[in-house]
Length: 491
Image 1 (cartoon, rainbow, N blue to C red):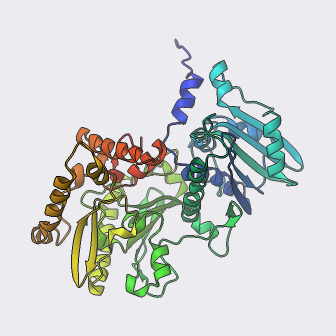
Image 2: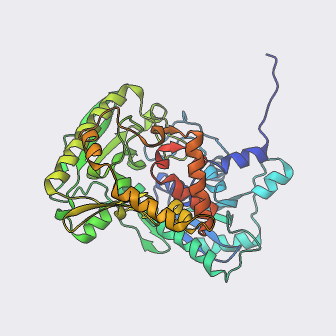
Image 3: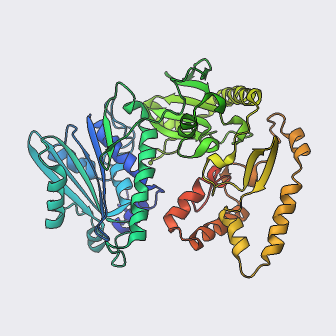
C-alpha cells in the first residue's frame, strides 16, 4: 500500500468546529446531553458576568469519569457514530462536547470526580493554534483552578464543564461595567431556559428523571402537545416500519384559543410562536431533536390555519444515519421510504387542525410570534380581517428610515399594497393544499442568489439597528421564509 498520512491542520480543524452553526442554547443543550447520559439527578447551568472574564459552566452530579474516560471525552471524534453506546447515551459522533464548546469559547475545562478522585483537562485554542498540535493541558492555570473549586464545592461525584474566553465577550473592549453588553449576555439566559425546557421536557415531566436549573431557577417542562388538556384531539398513533425497528408517529390537534386560558395560550405558543411551532417534533431517546418543522415536504409550508397541528415522531437511536441526524442534533432528513407516509399523516393532521380552527372562527394572528419575523400582520378588528405590512420588520423599517429615499412615497406604496391584497384570488388558490401552490423563493432547500441578497439586506438592517452579528444571524435563521432555506445565516 503506497500512501501518505494527510493529517488535518489543528488550526483549520478548530476553525471548522467553531463554525458548525450552534447557537448558545443549542450548544449548552449538547453539554446537558452528556450530563443526562451520566445519569445525573441534578444539572446546573451558571452564567456569570465579569466583562471579558465572563464564564458559563454546566455542573452535574452524575457518575463522573476516570482519567482515561476524560481524555477520551476530550478527544475530537474519539467515538464515531458506530460506537456501541448505553441506552441513556444521547451522543452520536463523539464531537458534541468539543464542537459545542469551541463554537462558544476559546478555553474549555472539564473537571470530573469519581470515587473521590479528581481529574482535570483543558483545551486552550490559543495553545493549539500556536503550537499546531492538539495539546490537551493537564493544568488549566491558577485562575481556572480556583474557579473550578468554587463551582464544584464539596461534590463527591460528577462533572464540571467550564467555558472561559467566551466568543463575542473576550475582548479588552468589553468591561465589567458595560451595561449594554451585560444585558445582552443575560438575555441569553432566558433563551437558554426556553430551549432546555423544550428539548428535555420528557426528562423533566413527572416522574422527573432529572432536575435542571439555570442560574438557580428550576426549569419546568414545555409540552408542545398539551397532553393533559381535556380539549386536545388525539389522532391515532401509527408505527412506521424502518428496517428491523419502527418509527412511532403520533399526531395531535391542539385546543383552539377559546378553550385555553390566556396563560395557557401564551405558553402553548412556545419559543417560536404559534406559526413557528407547528409541524413535526422529532425525538430520539426522548431528547427533542427538531421542534416544529414540516421536514421539507413539498407543498407543506407554515400557515396560520395549521397552527394547531403538531406531530410527535420517535425515532430509534439506531436510525440516526437513516434520518441524517447532524452533529448539532438540530436537524434531520427523513428516510426516503417514510416520506410518503409522513406526508400523508401531515396532510390529514393539517386538515383536521384547519377544520378545528374554522369551526371556532378563529384567526390566529402572526403577532403572537416574534413581531420582527413576519412581513405581514393579520388581525381581526370590528368583525373584519385586516392585513397590514409589518412596519417593525427590519427591512421595512430600514426603507422607512433611509435618508436617501422618500419616506412618504414608501409609506404610500405600503398602504396601496395593504389595501389591494388579492384576497378573492388567494382564497380560490388556497382553498386546499395543492402541489402547485406558490412557495416563497422556490420553497425549502439551498437559497438562490436573489434570496441570499434579500437575506443579506435584512441582516444588514439588523446590524444597523444595534444587533450583534450572531444575534442577527440567529434572528434571520428563524424568520420565514429564510428558516426553510439554507444560506449564510445558518451555514
